[in-house]
Length: 128
Image (cartoon, rainbow, N blue to C red; front, side, top):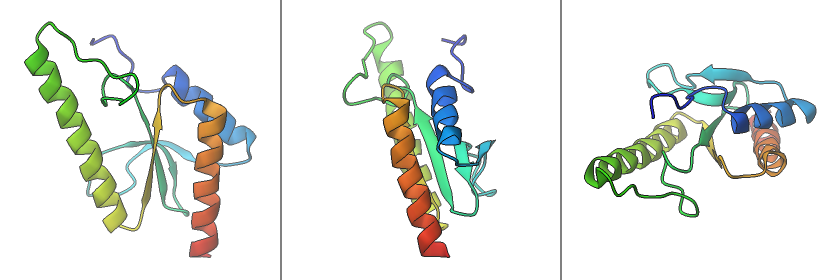
């Protein structure tokens, strides 16, 4: 498991490529709120949108997440802890005026990029 990439995964790069193709510019692997030690995969600063690309296994995808049989208690605690941290991150960002957008690794990058684009454009309209 230590060989798993945490940055620049295939889906993350595909999503960024599609966002760029749609004309959006962004920052990569930044903390949206400095006080919180959590990094978003893609950040749209002025619009205050933080995009997180979540792996199906690590974040307990309801469609594709699996529960390992070996050392099951450890993995269940780990994955549930990740879910709790994700929910906390979303709440903290919301309280700071940010919108957290979650993209599952199994999602089509084109569809996910369109969803992110709509969120960014909506936030830009509201904040303008």
